[in-house]
Image (tube, rainbow, N blue to C red; front, top):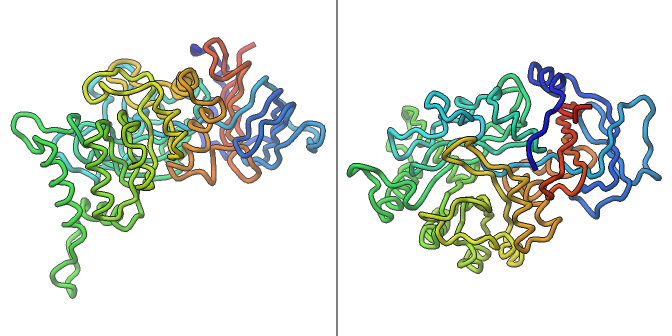
Length: 402
């Protein structure tokens, strides 16, 4: 699939104001509607009022209000959810002034907030929305031991507040060669990485010596204490089996809410991952397979599904332009390597939404959820299929040009 020209007037309006302020009353018809909350519906309809889904069902038995704007497509799905990206913190033109996803001055910086870096006007946000992506889990990326926080946003909005779904989603950490210091700076080895993480967790765990005195604010410790209290999951990018096991040991020692990101060699540790009860945000299927991705497998997604391990696919980070991949394509590629169609669709809709903590709002077409829709003129995972329309919070933000 390639990006197509879309009518952008609605997108401009939706960017100027919060989407709910302009929510439309819509009826969306699909020859096939994948709700991700049950079986696909042949000749189905989705009814949206005031930005929320109010009805989903077969056209023959679902009441369709009069006067609502009506759209139709061959295939209708929930708006796609990208489970991990740096879009909005990195720019499409690959220039230094638009690369805010990684601060390298210190190896541990959990206090860095994604909201202070996200640019909703970045062209990449518009670009991925053209492929049906309506929700992003974005934030600080790989390259340091603890790089910062992540957040969840919609792919509309003039300001970060307009786009916001979840201000703090996870704390992003990294193990392995991608987070080793240069020029003799720590951490220089894997044992040092683990030791530094343990030290940061133990420091935050310790109570102030004098409880009758108000302690000075420590931004790093405040965030780390939220991780220890399971108010924030710790997402650790770990690709080699030895690094994944290092992350699992941290989870066991500190009883963390852990998400494994990347997980190129996860197929070697299916029992360990399942027994640990962690979720996985799997590396892009088409990632370049060198370095700690050298042993990545095209069939890992199918293996995780077979093992019953919760996982989602992601676009991840692309070092060169356009700085991101596309989750729609990643899921399609996984289908070509053993993952069933609807299982692949789950990895970029409801499963992704649940893993990043927003499954109560997005990821499936159910009454009460946000009116986020992607429309296609054929099988979403076929290369020649086009995205013919995108709806976010009940606003038609793009549609196929006539």
